[in-house]
Length: 123
Image (tube, one colour):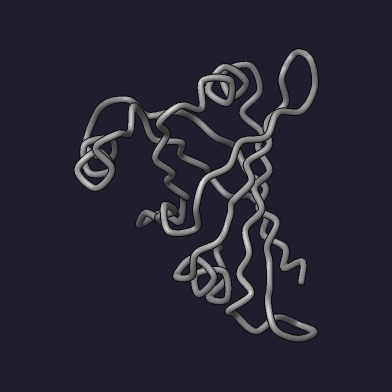
């Protein structure tokens, strides 16, 4: 489900924006491309240090949007490309996925797991 070009983007540093829907409207939080991982089932795994509002919003409504990009990867129209990812999220705070993430990111208090439903190349 996750295209090879997006996997290539994940190898380069850049900002990731994660949007959730809260009671008062949209909420955005950022992380880094290098923090993203893909599990064997194609879900995105993102270490969560803070993301308290994001977690609250995901409990209420699991739909998320995520964007990421890199100037280092050739896009459809020139240097640089980006992606819009749509999916459903949940927070994992115990178990093997959490322990593996915590071993790499000791500051993680949880893992934001996103089951991807659609990926669109935007650049």
